[in-house]
Length: 125
Image 1 (cartoon, rainbow, N blue to C red):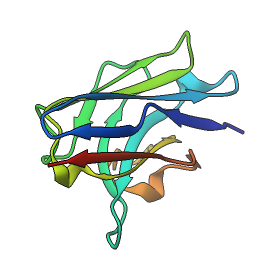
Image 2 (cartoon, rainbow, N blue to C red):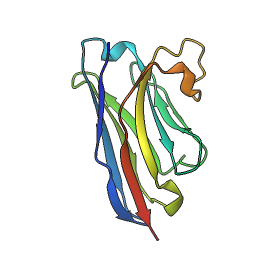
Image 3 (cartoon, rainbow, N blue to C red):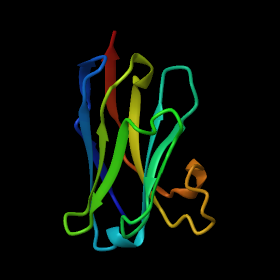
Image 4 (cartoon, rainbow, N blue to C red):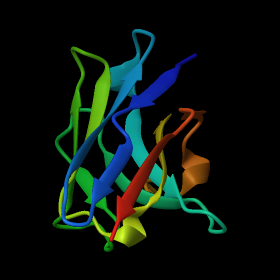
């Protein structure tokens, strides 16, 4: 069992930055692929970024590529999402997730079995 707790959300102006953190409980953090997803009001949950177990490989949605950076610290059981050049369309609840993702389908929410409660990110224009 893994419990995930996100933090770092808030209100920021367009063009600003935020850093989200996701702290995981348990000793098996490094055995999971970690992902970030987001859900805006009235929209489906969408993939944002994912990172491999060692942190050596990262994957991004086209909408955030070049602006967001995912990283992880396995010693601290924490995954991060650095968000720069934020846009109003980035406004959403952001969730971190953990999964085995043996299929390689990092973009699919169904590949992740543990989810955090979410943290709100609001970008004003």
